[in-house]
Length: 107
Image (cartoon, rainbow, N blue to C red):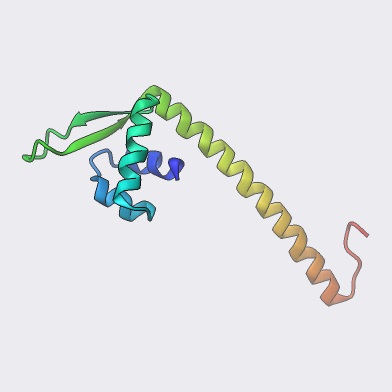
């Protein structure tokens, strides 16, 4: 969830908390809690969204620490998905060999 929030905020810093909640699929209260935690950890900072006439709106801007955290989360996510892909590929190969009546590379 933190990765998705950082990515969304990096792409669209002017997103409202309500829009962010919809995009991530969590409650507005959870988004508020997560944003406060990200601010406290120094990963994002708040700035007024100057292009908006409603000065109560904020832009959530990733800090250098937030950018580094997003990169680290991206690397871990990618490594996990590659491992899942390799396991799935091996399972598909084993099932295909079973259907074809051929031994697998591990046999």
